[in-house]
Image (cartoon, rainbow, N blue to C red; front, side, top):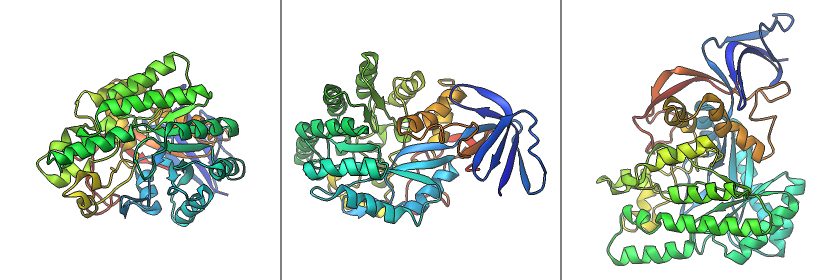
Length: 436
């Protein structure tokens, strides 16, 4: 039997904080209270958490590890990516199994399981992508939900010709999600407008990373967000909008929530920690390293705006869209920005970025921090209260966080070689240990 006692820390959940000890047996919380004395001290490991915070482990609901995409594969495999997650205080990730058009959802799910199961260092789950529509897709969604426990399916309104589906298919997919009790997810950008905008930029001789931002302005994200919410609401299906990157899209989600629509918005660490002015950086590898879809926004007030909406509940969850590519991979698009693999890092830095930009700055308190980094995701994806909470019976996915220590984000052993760190130089809180 493995026995652990965390003594004297401030236990922080989404709804309250208390100074308490936490007693753990075999990876499960067995007691929370003051001055716990759990029987014999034999084989009892004691961790002193005095003056530190004891938090539920982070849940990153949006990663793409070992992802075949845009002519290459993301640099982080499931070992490297989950190792980085744990180093940053995240004890569970939810990745995406994404089939090619015309291919089986079940087979994609099994493929991703075969990649992940031998390598993961922490708990994980899978969303499944809906990249085309047929009776077979409809039936496979039902099988995945009932037999494999998949409770979220992602549709793409962008990546025309690759993953994008139209409004009729969106309506059918959202209706099936409602029927099987799943959450519908959406990448909300107008893929047709992006395709036309990219042609225009290239015809004007704009081939660098700035063209990526110029052909995907805020309007194409906001329009698609409103359209997705409208379609989901028409079939009474809960909708989860991944990687909310713009002020205008965030406003659409906030307005919908005020109208009583069930919609969740997910800003990501990159959008909360930096902005899109990097696309005009004179160093091409630096600019290209920030290319992702939807793009970071050049308005420098965007990160604070998104953080404020995350703090007040208009946006619900924080993810990363962690999909790393090294400099050589990004160089696939050195003469054409449409060929730069889309993706950035973040799984290691998410919690520190949100603490620094959210809590340390005074925008949110420690309880809201736990909500947006762990608890809300656990509730949305049916993991709560095993995950996202420190309470009797919960999994002991626990982080001990030192709110007074600092670190500087830099490329180190957990980050893949030749991969630019998005938050390089950002000084932020250091977590002490994680994944108890």
